[in-house]
Length: 144
Length: 144
DNA sequence: TGGAATTAAATAGCAAGCTATACACATGAG
DNA sequence: CTCATGTGTATAGCTTGCTATTTAATTCCA
Image 1 (cartoon, rainbow over the protein chains, first blue to last red):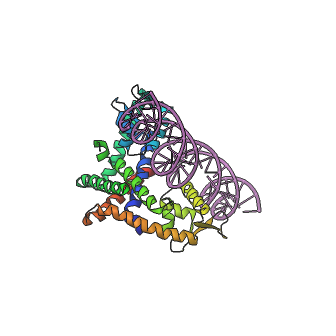
Image 2 (cartoon, rainbow over the protein chains, first blue to last red; image 1 turned 120 degrees about the horizontal axis):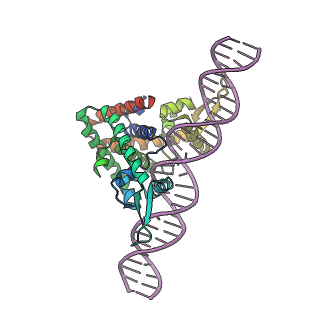
Image 3 (tube, rainbow over the protein chains, first blue to last red; image 1 turned 135 degrees about the horizontal axis):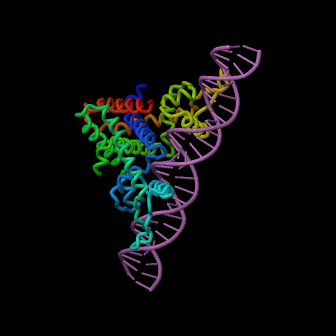
């Protein structure tokens, strides 16, 4: 690694993020990592608004709209019109979606395990904390 | 943040990576973050092969091919045919490219500064080290 | 030397992220 | 009650990433 790569927080983070996504996708055989936050949010049978899902996943609304469209196309998710607000729909997992959610959960745990195994046990909470502080700082910056 | 978001290394890393990219792009006014590794590799006037650039950036060859095509389209980069190997071309920055590279360097430093300011000074090297270990672990996994 | 294997780059096609904008419905103020 | 404003989704259009495949040139070996 060059000096820039070794000591740029952004460079390292972007690189690691791509490796995380690839490691998960490799385990999902055809599945992708985009639906993961939806799986986590809805795995216990709940239903949520697209807007709420976008907030949970920390992505913009159009990103979530497209992800849900692909999931709907693939039979993973159901959009039920909200009777109280005809603009809105409640999103829930289909049986196939719940099945895939379980598999995604297993893969995510495995990949996170590979990553955290690279850290000393006492470093792990520190790593999460550092990440959360960096995220908070960058979100403050974005809000300006 | 939910429990999953707070303690999933992959989730946190992906989230932070997107914030890094957005923070840089916000500062580049129309510019994007994809060319950044090319800027860093070529900023001092050197020329490199597409393959070498892809390795430096840690992206696949077609990803770099497309990035370079956009940069060429935008007048940032020049592809000079290699006289010794007609399959290959030497890539270098145009004057405009070098100008943009300087701006990108400033932005990257600023954004990295925002991130590292969220860490205690004595935590920073530790953070880079943790990231490098996680990257190494995930690359080992990918190589299996 | 001539065909096989390797290598550099390009292309096709998809996912997931973004911004900007459009559309349809809901709501609140007068 | 109507019209302006606000809100939930959808769409358009772009970048960046990936895998799989193709094309063209080089190299190696029999």
